View 1 (cartoon, rainbow, N blue to C red):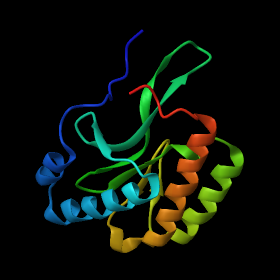
View 2: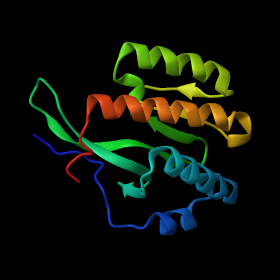
View 3: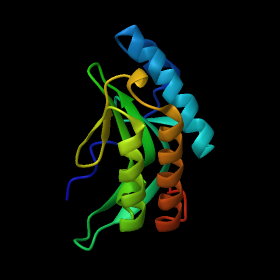
View 4: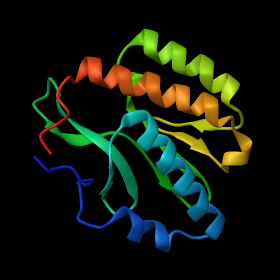
Length: 149
């Protein structure tokens, strides 16, 4: 069975931010980093070449597949920021709360496991902060240990 493609790296977050283009995304990445640090209380770590992650957890599926992943994080892509709010999928109640808040947050799109935001000016950062907190708490309930990493 193949391992995860996205694993922690030794690349510094600061070095990664220095290379983010365009500059507007670089500056917004710093704002997101401060927000995620504030809510999670965690220092960021790079996962793969472009995901800034906070905390980790170990998962194991009924199929036997298992691995480690970041509990929460983001990736400042050129077109859109990808927000990894894993707690949204922990339970139905959390998912419903997050979905209701996403409606209030502002312009965004959702994907299978991400929320996509073009630019931070399009959203209410206070609502995003609340969403990150709800998702973080849900992950702590479902995965009490902060991973093995």
